[in-house]
Amino acid sequence: MNANRIINMVIRMVMNRLIRSGVNAGIDKFSQRGKTPPDGQGAADPQQKHQTAETQKRMRQSMRVARKVGKF
Image 1 (tube, rainbow, N blue to C red):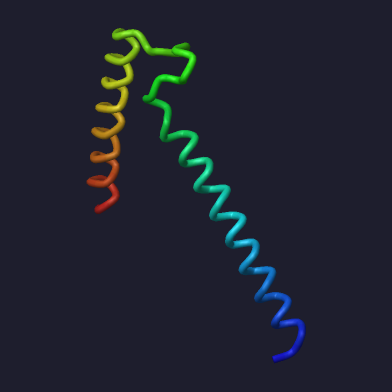
Image 2: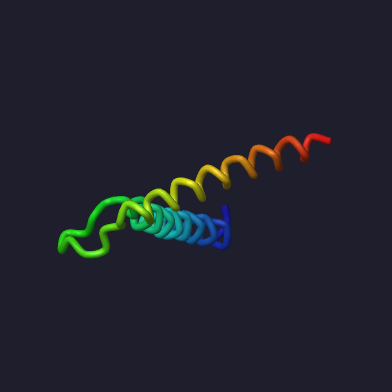
């Protein structure tokens, strides 16, 4: 093995680890959207929760239709 291959391999391993940790941090940050923050601010009211549930339902339905249309 020459030095260029070894350096590329090490750089690739470091970059993969950095990218993986960044993606995991982003997913963790956005997965806490339904939880209330420690200071109690930002709690959603019931109307907003209902609207969000309806939007999610419509999105699931449209995704289902898009998958069916994509088959043809």
